[in-house]
Amino acid sequence: MTTRLLYQGHGSYRITAADGRIIFIDPYVGEGYDKPADILLVTHQHDDHNKVELVTQKPGCIVITNVEALAGGVHNTFDFDGIVIEAVEAANANHDPSLCVGFMLTVDGIKLYFASDTSLLEAMESYASRKLDYAFLPIDGVYNMNAKEAGECARLIGARVNVPVHMKPGELFDAEVAATFDAPGKLVVPPGEEIEL
Image (cartoon, rainbow, N blue to C red; front, top):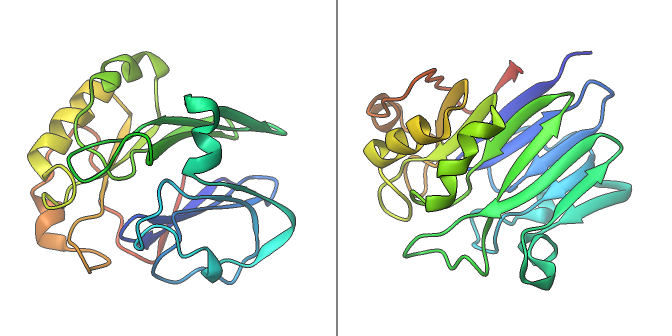
């Protein structure tokens, strides 16, 4: 089985690992909640990121929210039988860094960065050394950075593929806003589309 990611829209994702394990990140909208979760991640407690009730949890499901991710006042790392989850900084005028995280995941050797709700951060300067495969960057320009700033982040981070997300408040997706995102390796993924990573 290949490693796959379903973009559910806005800032919501479902990852299926090669061994069949299911990871949900920031459940809120879209389709694809029919598969029960092995791991459930929540970057922060805003209503458009934390609808955990949409997700059926398998017995023993691991839930990591911003609370666990920032336990002890540090960005923590978790390793679940080869799926590595690292909390990283996420912040802007609308998002307190003590209450919000991004996540870097390594799944089947594929390195994914889910920026969550953020703007350009000094920490991103170190991300190029990670040799990330995918970066998922918000571009709404209302609660987060706009597409231009997200493009600057993409160049700083140096991921192989850059995916615009969280495009317009209250909407799953906005093609016009997505078109304004200019970044190397740009990939626009419509909601409901599952890609092979």
